[in-house]
Length: 125
Image (cartoon, rainbow, N blue to C red; front, top):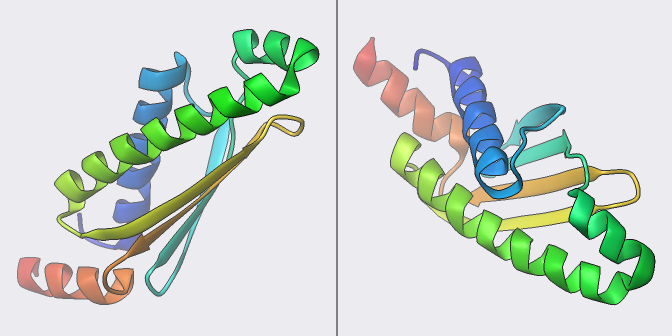
């Protein structure tokens, strides 16, 4: 990686990969913003058909299934992220809006992202 743009592209690939592993499909689009130690990702993530059908009959059960999937997703994305970037994650906050099919995720790192990568980029220069 040569710059923060490369970092974002790699993170887009990781996020898409975890979605493919867990849901059998990638994201339609995603946008990443970085503010200090916070990485904010918004993505269009089509609803899994089985959950859509359960949602119609039992929204509470569908929501519990969503929460279980979100927790597993956070475990996986944290592992991939820390392995790929060698930047420690403090926590990951994630939610999904099944009506609008939008996912929001905030990855909070232990140090500001730009500062961490400035050190990495200056070593590689």
